[in-house]
Amino acid sequence: MSRLGIALKKLRADWIPARFVLRTGRFYRSTMGTIELDGPADQRREMFQQVARCWQHLGEQEPYWSVLTAPQFKMSHIGSTGDEFYRSGQACLSTINAFFARSGQAIADIQSVLEFGCGVGRETTALASRFRRVVGVDISAAHLALARQAVSRHHQSNVGFVQLASIEAVAALPQCDLLYSVIALQHNPPPVMLEVLSQLFDRLRPGGYALFQLPTFWKGYSFSWREQLARTDSLAMEKHVLPQAAVYTAMRRYGLDLLEVHEDRAVGDPDIISNTFFARKSVCGG
Image (cartoon, rainbow, N blue to C red; front, side, top):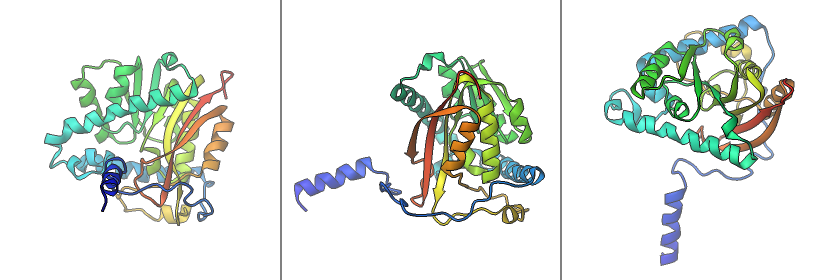
């Protein structure tokens, strides 16, 4: 191999993640299976409880690994890798800054942040270092206990936490200037994901912003209410998809204008397309 070839190989190794390479336009002509979004509210509540049972279990067994599924964040290693785990959360600030800057939006106007799916507080402490008030929301009491400890270690008094006990409880969350959610919504079945996201949009103040990530396409994926409800004893972490069309419909319903959407690498599976959305609520409200 020539010197140029060796140099190019090294460059690719340095800059392209080893797990996979995103190929522009993949699935451009692909379709997904049927994704059932509409159904009875009581069945949607049962799906929510499935998620709650799963994440309480994960929070009791492997809370850090459940957030970042790398072996070094298993409980058997977290004593030596905990600092690395929490340092990784600082990247959320550069992400937020970049989205605001590219769209010409005034990040200085953000006083309050609602972080949905805060987990053990990996990004919560970073958000609290930048914004006046942060509320971390999670479904798992076990995760929230560790999040409170993380905030305490950082001596941050501008953070509050809410355990989400039901879908209906989303409507009672405090209003905010910025809704932020990454690698959280994707663990809910599509009907739950859509309902939760819709209610979160409603908690945005007029003129507020939403920056959130979720998968929108998965090769071969389909969703059935009946099949999901039959999973009565599963405590395994699940991953789901919400089509872009459903996201945009919810945005319109609650008066949000899309500012940017980017494909991201949050999921780490070449058969899945994950997107990060940045939107602003009309100053006239939804």
